[in-house]
Each structure stands twice: as structure tokens, then as C-alpha cells.
Image 1 (cartoon, rainbow, N blue to C red):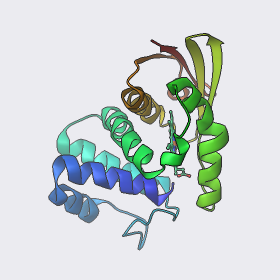
Image 2 (tube, helix red, strand yellow; image 1 turned 180 degrees about the vertical axis):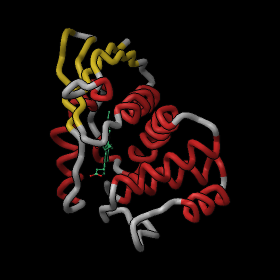
Image 3 (cartoon, rainbow, N blue to C red; image 1 turned 120 degrees about the vertical axis):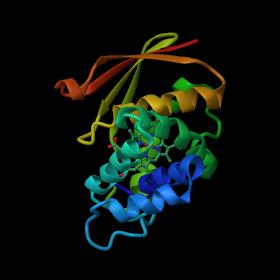
Image 4 (cartoon, rainbow, N blue to C red; image 1 turned 60 degrees about the vertical axis):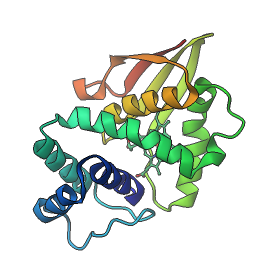
Length: 181
Ligand code: HEM
């Protein structure tokens, strides 16, 4: 996983819970050797990211799933602010979401060598409904849910979603039904 995703988790920790918790997490996590500080374009083991998330979840007494969801919601406006070019000329959340797989994550892959972004395929069902397919060995579909709410807030348009099938229940990929108001 790219350092940028570690840095977003670190920012959430500092913004919402303070520097001290982050220092405690650094001290208690059994990271792979010499990973600190996490640098945006570098790749680090997924297990180090999950170690940070799990320790935070224990410290603030919030299930990891809820924490990962909150991170998704928190990180979307940060990404939108950092990479405005990906939102230029896209007027609807559906149009934007369709660009994630074939434009944004492709550009990210060029920008950061050896990235390993997930599959996020969004296909129309009818004029205000779509289907989102998510596949990643990291199984971070709660991050997708948080990001979807972040996208909805950004565009000022509600997106309702329901998980029709989930990798965490053994499905090959997650399928979310999306409805745009
Ligand atoms: C400006 C918008 C966005 C940018 C710049 C961006 C960039 C990135 C980057 C750099 C990574 C790390 C990849 C790696 O570690 O190899 C990532 C991961 C991820 N992205 Fe995006 N992303 C954006 C929007 C979205 C949206 C809207 C979604 C979903 C609706 C999404 C879903 C994910 C997920 C779930 C991951 C975690 C890794 C995984 O599941 O395997 N991203 N993204």
C-alpha cells in the first residue's frame, strides 16, 4: 500500500485524536523494520497499515470497520483538494465515479511506481442507478463506502448504496448498488 494512504490515516489520527495517540501507535505497532516515516510515493506492507488501524480502533474503542469507513469520508475532500485536476469538468458524482478506475487510478499508477490500486468499476443500470464492482485483496469495501459518502458531500448530492454481495462474506468481488438522488 502506498505511503499516501498511510499518511491519510496519520492525518486523521492527528486531526481527530491528537499527536500523542499517533506516537503511542508508533511505539506499540510492530512495524516491518525501518518503515517510519511513511513517505507518500513509497510502498509499505499492508500489514503495517492494518496494524495502525487496529491499534487506533482499540484505543478509541471504535470497530475497525467504522474507523475505515470514517477514514474514507475524511480522505475524499483531502484527495479532491490535492488532485483537483481529477474533478475538473466532471459535473456529476456518477461521471466522477466512472473515472476512478480508468483515469484516476491509472494516473496514480503512473505517478507512483508499483502501486496496486483496487478495481472500482461503475456501470449504469438506468438513469439514476448504477452498479459498483470492487475488487482488492485488501477487502477495504468500508473505505469505498466512506469515499462514496465523501463524494456525495463534495457534489452536494445524496448517493444511497447497498452491498449486494461482499468479498468479506466469501464473494469473488463486492457489488454495491448505487442510487443517485
Ligand atoms: C481524487 C480522487 C482519488 C485519488 C487521487 C485516489 C488515489 C488513490 C491512491 C494513491 C491509492 C493507493 C493505491 C496503492 O496503495 O497502491 C488509492 C487506493 C484506494 N482507492 Fe483511490 N483515489 C481517488 C478516489 C477514489 C474513489 C472515489 C474511490 C472509491 C469510490 C477509491 C477507492 C480506493 C480504495 C478502496 C483504495 C484502497 C486500496 C484497496 O482497496 O486496495 N479511490 N487511491
